[in-house]
Image 1 (cartoon, rainbow, N blue to C red):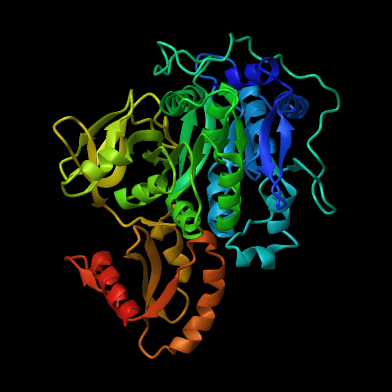
Image 2: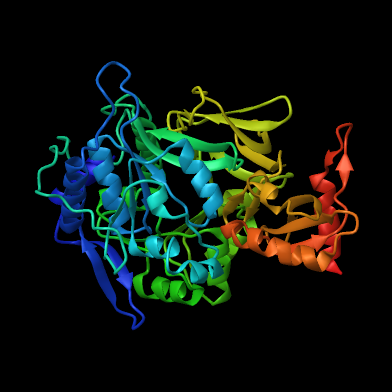
Amino acid sequence: MLDRLSHALRTDHPERPAILRHTALGTVRPVIRRGDLADLADLYAAALHARGLGPGGPGPDPGPGATVGVAVRPGPHALAVMLAAHRLGLRIAVLDPSAGPDVLAARLALARPDLVLADAAAQAVAGWARPLAHRADLALPQLTALGPVATVGRRLPGCAPRLRPADNSAPPAPTVGPPALSAPSALSADDDRDSGDAVIVFTSGTTARPRAVVHTRAGLAVGLRTVADLVRPRPGTVVLGGTFFVLVPALAAGAAVVLPARRPAAIGRQLARLSPAHTYLTPPQLRAALATGARFTGRVWTGSAPADAALLRRVKQSGADQAWSVYALTELFPAAAVEEAEKSAHDGNGDLVGHPLPGVRARLADDGELQLTGPGARHRYLGEEPDPWIRTGDRATLTPDGRIVLAGRLKDMVLRRAENIYPGLYEPALHVPGVELVVLVGVPDGNGDERLVALVQPAPGADPQHLRTALRGPLDRMGFARPDAVLFGTVPLAGRSRKPDRSAASTYCARELAR
């Protein structure tokens, strides 16, 4: 689909806007036009090619291409970099500034980039604006310690040199037919030009042993086609959303994309002014927009966090024709989807997330864990052997007609504001002198989300006030995983091994916070 998008940007109304922005004054302006986005991708491809970056070596198993770390905000530059990397057979390692510098540095040691591409904002977060960025739970290690750095987008003083070619020579783009959203082979991962690595996305694990999801070019293409077949964006319409899986299918279909505003009230103004045919927002974004009186149009899609039937009903009561919840994982996007009417009609226990999407297969392990596989699933975890089945960590049941009903998390991952938080990544850093034991647990907030709480057990004789001071630095470095509350108390233990009982700890924290 990335090849088809590159073709469509040049041949299907290249003069039309590709990405729009809604100004504070209420006007709509193009950020970049379709043909200009294709030109930008060409420029980046030429620049990367001039640096000698390309696919793996010859032979039946050439291995991965060069790795490019990307710390660029969603938008035209990020998408152009992805198109250029795909064209050259490179793999992208996504650098998330909200993960915290220590975690990110440990992750990139596992897949050290040959080049880091960063916009001015990311470089500011890693440099002069670090104190301000901490207030927004953003932090990056010094990018130059990760590899050579180049700037994409506007360059500010103090930034690395811009990514630009010595000339405009780059490998020719693949020859493809007219862009198509689906085909008889749309769910086969064997019809792409190769199955080399496309993208690395870091997920769970620990700082000492990070875990990274590797998607191949073929698997990524299947995921994009699945989204296109599910959503079916139409030419000439407007789509509100900012993720890669929104941008590519929408632009390939000839739609224009508007990136969501940061403030809920501004999202409401975007919805009122643009009347998008499709809107993609996380459940926290939906709740915040609804609280400002936002009105919706067309079809609304949400995911990345639990979305109950009540939230979807509120969206439809606020004007949407349909409201869909999408079940997806870093390892498999998307996996299942359900519309509000079907979700509301479910009268059994658990959270109905719908039928597996075409090509996705589901099974249950002996302990009730949901396992998924399909041609769009991740190929492997970096450094591990391929395994076709994904262990989701969710308890589930399957209805007689094959629909998936979730019954809670099997392990201890916390899901807060559409972000997955893995306690094992951050707990070791909180064991400062004077701390005997600490656990990070989720506490339901009554709104389908969780609060993250650090339960700290002081060592005998330790002064809690001194501990709060000692913990301030490690807490500041946790990025988006910074707890909502820090409580001091005894961590419950269970089992013969006397491991922390996270369920009991969550219950204790909920009781303390309710006082």
